[in-house]
Amino acid sequence: MPIKKIRLIKRLSLKSRLVLAAVVWLTVMIIAAGLMMPSQVYLYMQEDTKQQLAIYMDEIAAALEADDKGNLKLTSPLSDPRFTRPYSGFYWSAKTDKALLRSRSLWDKTLIAKDEHVLLGARDEKLIYIKSTLYYPDYPAPIEVVIGTDQQPIADTVRSLMGQLWLILALLYIGILALITIQIQWSLSPLSKMHKELSQLRSGKKTQLDEEYPKEVAPVVSDLNALVFHYQELLERARHHAGNLSHALKTPLSVLKNEVSAKDAMTQEQLRPSLEQIQNQIDYHLGRARMAGAKNILAVSSCPSERVDAISMAFDKVYADRGISLINELDSDLNVAVEQTDLDEMLGNIIENAYKWSSSLIRVYSALHKDKPETIEIIIEDDGIGIPKHELDTVVKRGVRLDETTPGTGLGLNIVCEMAHSYRGKLALEQSTLGGLKVILSMKLAQ
Image 1 (tube, one colour):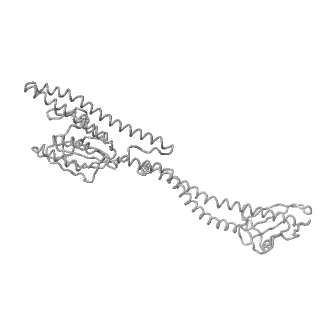
Image 2 (cartoon, rainbow, N blue to C red):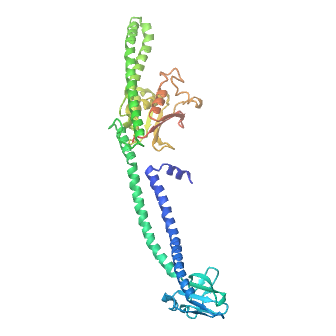
């Protein structure tokens, strides 16, 4: 089976799987019933006919006489008049080595045995028949009696019954399939309810799922509620801790600033940048902690095209003397599941690096992920000097800077990598066809 078909089967919904299984099972059962029942009905009617013929056989045995020369005669007619009507389809014959006695229905014909299992009547019709060997006191030799009836009426009856049976089976098939579909729909309705509530949770309309679910689903709902609650508590706790840390450092930092301001100008010039850097880092991480505490994190959506335009306008002013051109090829309708401030942080760090190292051109475009259709790749390329291939994995580590002469902390790409991971995305670095660095930021598409 092709891989695409296997993947398609694996992605079928539970409802589709159950309905498909029911259709296959029901189809096989209905077809098997339609094919097996005719033969079973025919065998039943054949056995019933043979039992009726056995009654006639008893009548023949009671009324048949044979003299010492082997001549046969029937002392009284059979109870069924069809044995006396020519070509009626009901026949019998009795024979000895010297004589043959036939029913009037055979007229001038005889029963013909084509083979061991096929006996033909007066019109060469196939017969359902029984045989019996009789012995009488006046004639010691065996007397073979054969009685049979045309099998075509039984075959016609079975064929007529099967036409009605297929209609009944078709109605039964439709009815059972409809009932199974309703049963599946009703059985899976809690999952549909859960999906609806999860959508409301994602959009921020709810803070947890309802507790009224069947006992098979209730543990999953309970665990999800506990997970969401724990997630929100962790975010709130992290935000409070970051705030507490910031306030705890504010006083010692103010003391240091006052001490530095009392020093001479040269000492102040040496220490002030470090103090400002500490203050900026505190403010930055406090801001990130506040952003991470957003309660509607599942409902976020941002437009990368708009953010790239806004960021490039700012950097065009900062790096106006370098004459860098940024080409934004992102679709304005494209939205990713990332909070806007976090998206600005990620794209800002990447684009700022491109502005620092590009020679003249930065290109920003998007591409769908090869294996994940719900993921988009935002690609930023520049025509700068790039990064050696063996250092592409190293540069995203915390605090790593390849050029110490350029201002920076070495945290930018590491922060982007961590933030992308928190949104179930990924950051990858490659060498660009423009000659510089190619940054691939993979993120989930907004719902």
